[in-house]
Image 1: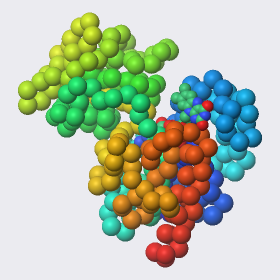
Image 2: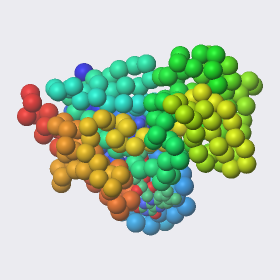
Image 3: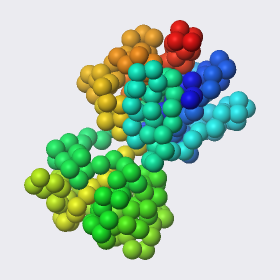
Image 4: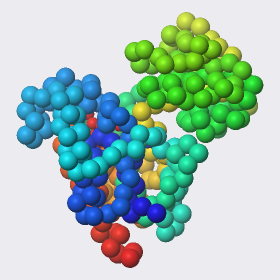
Length: 283
Ligand code: FAD
């Protein structure tokens, strides 16, 4: 049972982690190797105090040095769900369950919109964790719409069970995929079916499929944490970064605009301090 589980390794999650460490709490932080893909994308950052003129990549190196100095390690795994169980939380990561007394959501925000039909077929062939649901697709056809390299591992796992796997990369680079996987370079437009998913319509083609997994950098917060109060696609928090679920805090882009590094880092700091205050109260 951890004191705090932090979900997200951008500036908000990292700032929460360093403050949890300073406050001597047991914690785990989930995220990815790059820390945040948005750091990779920023050509020049002029508004982060003390880092004038640095690129996002250079700032990431600074963040990595900071983590190393403090002995903080990112657990490079994607959290699929968080369940509030009254006095603690269950955090689902593929087939594993982690437990914590508090949660800090620092998952960033998705810029892409949902595909036509995605919400309608969610749970009826559409899912967000291929490894979790793979056994349901034994001998069937599965399509993976992938926004990051982590999806390659999921696709390779699914192809051991499924009859056919289509992989639609929404990012550039080399793909480390099993030779039996069919790569499709086309733009998904619409998910269609009847009671369940039957096909994916792309810009220039369409494919028959039994299941579609969409592996984005972040899940929408309402999909991640059932019962979380959301307004205009952002998690609702007060000035202490408390959400409507006791013990669950949120920080960074996922709670609203402006989408900025320094705001995210500041809110991560508040979220961690509020979690510490909460832990002292429930002792
Ligand atoms: P993110 O940085 O988005 O980090 C969230 C992290 O959580 C990601 O690593 C994601 O993979 C991970 N995550 C999400 N869900 C899960 C899950 N379920 N399990 C595990 N991990 C998960 N801001 C500025 O202030 N100045 C700039 O100059 C600037 N330039 C930018 C340029 C570009 C091209 C872009 C895209 C953004 C720019 N920004 C800039 C905005 C800045 O990148 C964001 O405001 C900031 O990264 C938000 O930090 P965050 O921690 O809230 O989220």
